[in-house]
Image (cartoon, rainbow, N blue to C red; front, side, top):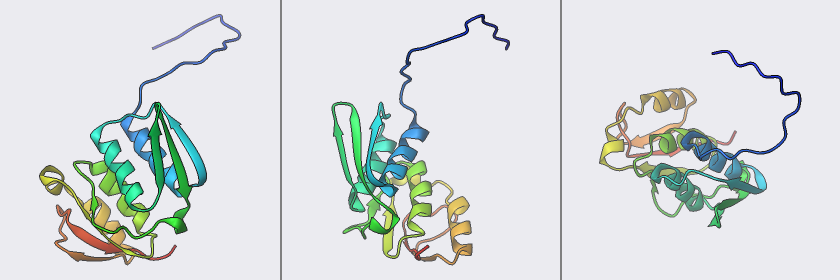
Length: 154
């Protein structure tokens, strides 16, 4: 495709619809940052809501008000061990990204998902994390989802 224009100066703003991939990462980065992060026009699908709840369960304050997500980031060392197992719902993005994040947390965590998520391959996450000497226990296989991991301080 070729695009040609004679416009020399353009000013204004545009609004694009929320994107699932960017929404997940915005919540993760905002949670791991120190201080307040505001995210506008997040995609509020079930997967993204699962990621938000997981970080709430890890001790991050996340407020969803008037179309703005406000995250009080705690930094990597500020994540807290959850009271219960982390429910990833049906979100493959959540389990894969959050497993990597928690590899650097110095506490044990259990993660699980729904029946559909439990049938998806997890080896692209578990194999590299095992090489990094992350300790796993429980029903761990290439398609496993119910597992516990113990991270190590980075």
